[in-house]
Image 1: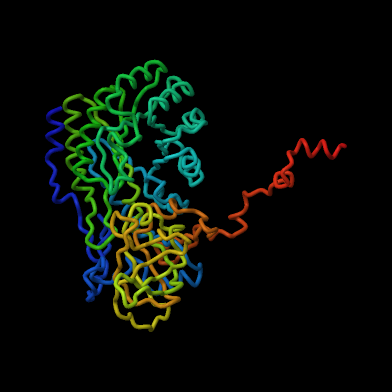
Image 2: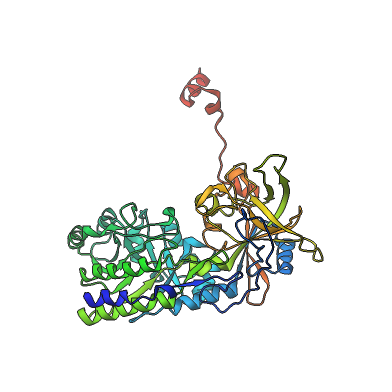
Length: 491
């Protein structure tokens, strides 16, 4: 065990992060970006230069709007493929399975693209399991770790889906549904790390996983139902600190030591991705090297060669997606007094990108003029707001402070201009406030390797928004119970 801990201690933390340049390459990929022009702006503005889109050129953005309208999510196949290749190169001593945390972006086209690279699936609900199967994944390529255990868990196990019990009650439910089954156990290792408190899923303040000190109860339930624990799973949060992630690898191997039938250790995902210029991204090769050494040390001590699984979500898709919107209005509250702002209002908002309103997440924002020959215009500080009747519908809040405004340096926008919100490939289309203010779901487009944009989800119609609503029976609004109404009619 000491050798294992020592292996994880040999971590060059300074190299665990890869800085994202002003238009930096996606972490681990070789795709270069243009440098953003520097402009003089007031010191109270979040950035000192107006950014340029990560992969959407002005010409392509205008084409996408002309063909599909706005708001629209746009994904880039080349960037998705590059990130998949990087994840699949994660250092592993005795075999590697990369599972896409599909909650990050569950669109079928994205799933199919990643499946083509050999990436499997991490599902967070029974519905995601079914959705992945419809996208072409075999049941045995899907792992389920869910806060809500599906009622048909027995059928999913029989199909071959790999199920991780995330609580003692779930382990009991699996045992009752499928005695003697092979099962995974998700533990809370006692520590967590996330980009914000809302994305931290480890430690004593998190309900995710079985508390690591409850190993005796786990062993008792395994014996009671003749279950075979073949996998140990941990996940500590999204946007986690690489040092904490590596510490958890050591703790997870210690848990695997207690369960002799374990063949696979799943360390989750949560690798930090720099969306904004200058933000750091986790270098998988750097954080993976000591983990591989730890697996080798474990094998030397125990004779057990464990397979490694990782579950990247944000890492695979965040910077391979953007939201394309249209500037609907430009207003100002600047007057003789202090404290006013210039506002840019979009035809999109928390109905498409909830992350800023939810936990103060930051996304690069760029203005592209509608007319190809229009000059870029001066750079100034703007607050970018959404289209919902909600004062918290903002794209430009302060980092980690969703209720605090922070101006962003943008080229002077005009009504009708295009606005690109980058870093929208993860936890945007799949985590939006669907149909708030009755706005329909936005369309999704994937730019193929040939540079052609393909529609991969049509824009929702109002009829589709209303499809599941049913009219109220007359008696319900007339204040007379149905039985009484029937009796009165008979008289």
